[in-house]
Every structure is written in structure tokens, then in C-alpha cells.
Amino acid sequence: MSDFSFCSQLARSHDVSPVGTATEAAHWLLIEDPSPWGEEAVEEADWVPEVRAALSGWREAVPDLRVQLIRREFGTWDTPGRVRCVAVRAGAEPVVRDWSLDTYDDLSTLEVTDALSATSGEEDPDPLVLTCVNGKRDACCAKWGRPVADAAADAVPNAAWQTSHLGGHRFAPIVLVLPHGTQYGWLRPDDVTGLVSAHRQGRLFDLDRCRGRVDQPRPVQAACLSLRSRLDLYDLNAVQGTVLEEDDGHWTVEVTAGGQTHTAHVQQRERVVAFPHSCGSDKSKPDVEWAVTWDALASE
Image: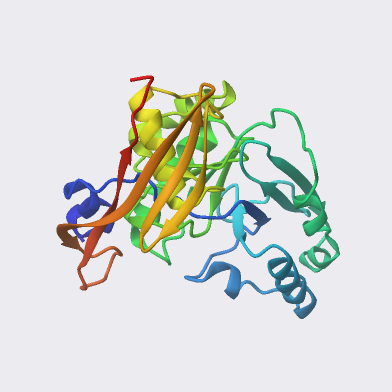
């Protein structure tokens, strides 16, 4: 398979924009599993019925809960004989709750819903760097994700995790930084140290490769990144947005930055380019991107 048979390379060659494409999920449950992962990693995990029932209950209580398998590396436990689990509420006021379990059966005893609904969490939690390496889901995630995951493990071993499918493999390698919830695409192994340093300093790493913040709807992601680019704003919490109105594929988004409130008008538009969005697919799909226009920006 040549590089340009990979959907990630095809997307880059067609100037696809990663803006406003981050996974939409404010709540995350990370479960350590260093075994081989299938195409549907969580659904195929070998857990007892009580654990499956607990997962269903948590998802019912927290509809946007995203469950991910994580590992330091294939076949290696973070702590031998223990199962690491982390619940995260992403966003400007994050919550992180960490557990160490004897067995997977103990998953059903966790108070995940309570942890995710806590009113406050640890101040300035250290970032977790999750790199998608799920090659069974898409070949790009293995080919491009593993070198980034290895670089992260070398640079920041306590922060780095490999993870199952994160979505949007045409942007692989894909990295999610929790608990803030920023998702990046097309990172390189030599980006990892700078990325972690930026987030530890409370700053985004690279606006051009930032897909968005996972606790925000995609129209808000697009509007916030548009304003950041216009005003050169990198502080993690410098920009906040909310949907004011949605009407037939048009979103009016209120975005606040620097004490000023701006109004964006966001629409999706179909580009003329089309290509397979997954490796191994012979079906071309049109690229869709966000168009953001603004009412007058006084700060420009």
C-alpha cells in the first residue's frame, strides 16, 4: 500500500481542514487493556455481563459518555496485577478521577456517574496524551499513530497512553489531550514534547492542526478556532462559545474572548474534492468543511 492509499495522506493532499472535526464527548471513561484490540474494541472486550450492564447504565445516565481502551504499550500493564481506570469530564472546568482495580469484574463497582458529575476536580491536573493506534479500525491509526505514541512514551511516559478508535482517522495520527479535551490531527513524533509543554503551560500547541475541543459541538469548535486564528489566541480557556440558534444547517454561535462577545454564523459547505475517508474503502466521499462568518469584530 503506497502512502497515498492511506486516507490520512489523501486528506492532506486534498487540503482538508481539521477545524471543527473533534469527537463530540464531554465525558470519558478510560479502561486499561493491553491486549490486542479489534475493530470495535470496547464492544469486543471480554467483560462479564455485570460490567456490560454497568456500562449501559453509565451511558444511559451520561448520554455523551465515550468509553476508550487505553494501554501504555501492547502487552504491558501500567502496574502489573492492577487495572487502571480514569474518568474525565473534559472542558474549562475539568474533573479527573483515577482508580486502580484488582480485576475487570470490579469495573461494575465504580461510581462513574458520581465522579463525572462532581462540582470540582483537581486543580491543574497533568495532561493525559492519548494517541489512537487502533489499526484494526483503520490502517492509518497504526501506520501514523504508533510512531507518535512511541515518541510520547519516550518523552512523557507518565502522561502517554495508546488508545482505541478516537474518530476521524483521515486526520491520523490523532492525539487527544485530556482533561482539557483538545484534539489534534496530523501530529509528528517530534511534536510531542512541544505539545505537552504547551498544555502544561495552559496553551494550545498548534491551531493549524487543532481539530477542536471535545466538550463543544462542532459548530462551536469551528467558531472558536476561527476566532483564535483571527486574534492569535492560544491560552486554553481564552475562548468560550455557545450555540444561540440553529436553523436548517445554520448555527448562530456566541463566542467570548478577552471580555468581549462576538457573534459567528456557521454553516457546512461541500467542497468539490472527494476521496475515500477510510483506508481500504473504494467509495469516495465529498469533503465537508465549516464556513464561519462574523459580525463586526471590534478587536481586529
